[in-house]
Figure 1 (cartoon, rainbow, N blue to C red):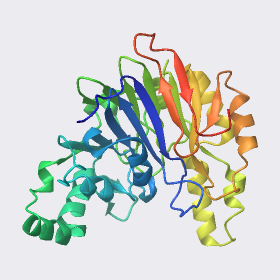
Figure 2 (cartoon, rainbow, N blue to C red):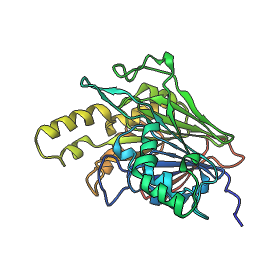
Figure 3 (tube, helix red, strand yellow):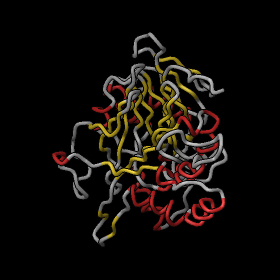
Figure 4 (cartoon, one colour):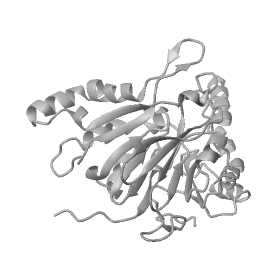
Length: 339
């Protein structure tokens, strides 16, 4: 007999590392928000699926939202989509929506990025096509497309945003709603990644914002206004640059890192400007054991934000509000030690 879901809103740090790095200390970036037993996953970084199953079930999964299409946010997406597909006792209980950016042109050479719908179809129809065909015939499973519903998030027409003007100041807009949550998005500033989104999850218990990858963004400040919990990316630029040998590749990556991410000297200003209840830092760069100066990161964030600041570790759990209490109350159940 299945036990009833635990009421409340919790945030699970499934992966707290940033960048296309195989790290022994942090899984790739991924966050799960669970409300009254239903789970919504934001990004699907490398290794996060194992941590997902430590916190939630396939039956609980309702949506996967992608902030953008860099590989470190997508590595485990295929695993999320096919692992819960009609396995007795380990299956989705309802169709799972996958929402993320649509296609865009990049640069001056006619390169075009893939839409989220195209990525999902490529996974189901090409990457895992043999697996799907054999299991449907051998195990009598149905079509996984009946369980996986992919959608491209459309940037509102009046936003004035396009591939050339990627980050105009815009209002947040709703991308998902069910009986438990409303999820809104905002365009953020991640250089050539367009569109790139931050997401806000609101429930009757409170509100959580996940920044995605971004330089300091007024759109994110607007999205996060008054939120109980802001999970924001952070970079220790000097430390990550110290890991790269000199050369043309280093020069190109340095431009990207400087213009696409938020240094620890700036992230506290974002939280203060939004008036959030608490700041949690994740998508830590550099993402190798001991490479990032965590003490400097904390000190830098706390210099401009008077509220609580924490650096998330994999499998930390944050409780937002409690049943019957005001949404603004935030309590924590943390596996990490940097309180």
